[in-house]
Length: 282
Length: 282
Image 1: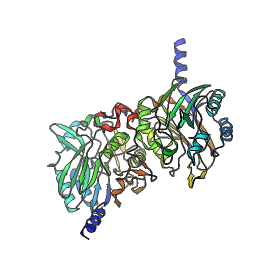
Image 2: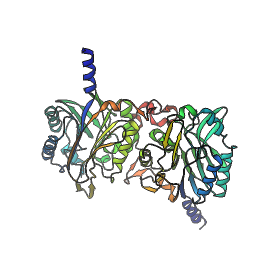
Image 3: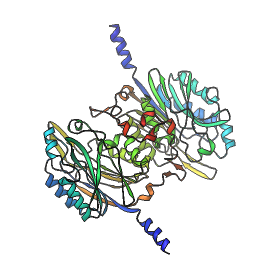
Image 4: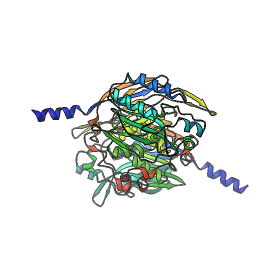
């Protein structure tokens, strides 16, 4: 009886709500953006909640000085502390992008916090466009965080185009990939994220921003369409292209464990590693 | 003047027609299927022409004996000889799937022939479902064929779900990936092939079959939707789900050489190889 109950509880624990929060951060207005995030987070169910890349600052920096001014240390910076508090209130795990300062360097990072604890950061590996001017490339690798037995990988925005990023996270055991983003390429990226889900048989949560930023002689039109995609490439939730949006779906993360398609093919065990290009790995 | 002409010719030579031929092979009726292929090939423009996986035999084998009976050696088998002749008549490069017999083993192979010459075969690396019973896994690696300066990689059907297959071909220099297929998974695979195009910035030609096969207690419904996709993920041609179809598009293969997106990011040079999972490569 006791054993049966334990089994039952452990099965139950594989179910969790996945959520994205999509909105248009106002450039440089950190307090206002944090307020927006807190307001929208009320509409997300407790579970794993993903906010956009650079959700607290906006994206279109004009100078390194601006980057410096808006950067914050991880863990003890104001944004991370707010996220930690929010994660406690919501009894949730939250992944959200911010500019991280660390020993004079700046990173396009995502914090991961859970139930009142700061778990760590992922620093974006593949920098897009002018990000190469503002940020240092990530130096912490691709990370999977185990929280309550749920294995959460993190990648940011342009990492989508490199299949190795999601693949590495999945090979490290990620069941769900949190993908904060500021996507601009006409929805191409969202479609490629469908591929990332099925080729790795993981859930993906892309939290994209909306709105337009015109700064420093450039205009960025963000494409919204935040989405949650299943390991079988079913789009479980999708936002529009213009408005703020929150969506939560209840899923069984266990379904991202067995890598079997069509009842017969294990897409991890059947990789023909010796035949792949040697430059895939170190 | 002479120099300018040479330059001009070499630029011209990067343009080529890409084509797929989609139809419903009749199981076991090799002569009839070859005839159908010859008839449809008339409608394809000269260039690179791709036919479906196992286009000459059909797919749904019932026994190893059937496989043995329908298998042919590469190069000197009847199907390869017909393809060689066709390639000469069409002044084209042709990629087409067939069951290859070699020293008592059978492979789900694709022949590549060009302008009257047999160039070689690719043997499918990742076998789907019952193919594991009928065929030996490919043992020739992922191959890129250089024909008239056009670099053509070959993969077959289920290889689509392994990002390493297309990636390996692209890293080996493929500008276009010929992808003979017998796809059944509701068009998921075709969408993932869009990702294969943009993540590697290569052209992909998926030649899928149509029709239904009910044999050996199983029913396969093939999904058609053969397609040609550009390095920027534009679907240049697409067939329907039910009927035979031929499409040709003229492209500049040179556009698959520069791996630059958004004018700034070289997606090959910017790979963070040291951060990728070591099991990607040998």
